[in-house]
Image 1 (cartoon, rainbow, N blue to C red):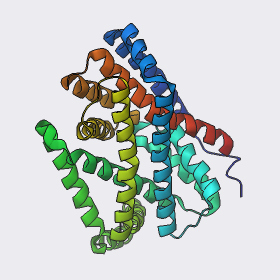
Image 2: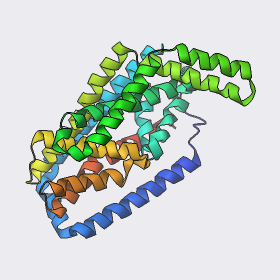
Image 3: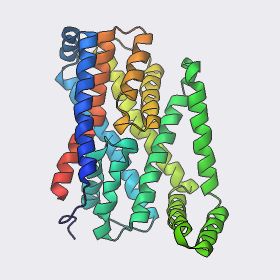
Length: 313
């Protein structure tokens, strides 16, 4: 079955993404001018093409591992989608990654509808992915957050909130109680039943066995990009200890994700530059590493998503 024809890509979402790209370009240009574009250009040359290809390969490993997790979630909900169209749908969602909270990735739900996956279940997979990503990045950050005690409250607080949410969905009694109450009340309150159905599907994706598998894949996926960041710093001539590189990358992604800005743009970059400068890198090297990292992770994913979305149409 084709997932083409009337693909409901919101014009507002497209406009938002275009504006996000334009603002990101302006922000990167401002960073270049602030740090000195000649020094940044020298850093780009120093990294070289072979290293950049290796970094892109590690980013691609991140996307593939998360796709495996996506397939596992769909199977847990009883949907066996062939991996070829499923991969095209999954990567097409990256086209709208630069949207607030990555909600543009809910586009996947529209593409899955012709394949018999209800929106409530594809939405549950989406939120399960976001929760698993957040938990994986938190684990990577918390492993070395002692390097930055000032970041401990954010990491610890986020871990407590995520853990509480996971424990809450393990006990479905309260969800069924809210569902029954909403159906008795009727009217607008009845809409809570849809939310309860979403939470119950989310719970299916977060059973302990499924959660354990998802966490292993998540840590491996985001660990691959953290390793790429460590490699990038070494290629620039400013190697940091691996635990410190992992912390700088994962904590920057954590702040970007919690900011709910499109793709974490602005917040992730500011934190990454600040942490690198604070660890002795010159401003030009910190800006070079940050821009190359974001190009090889966020914008590489967006480029792949645009290609897959064009094919889906």
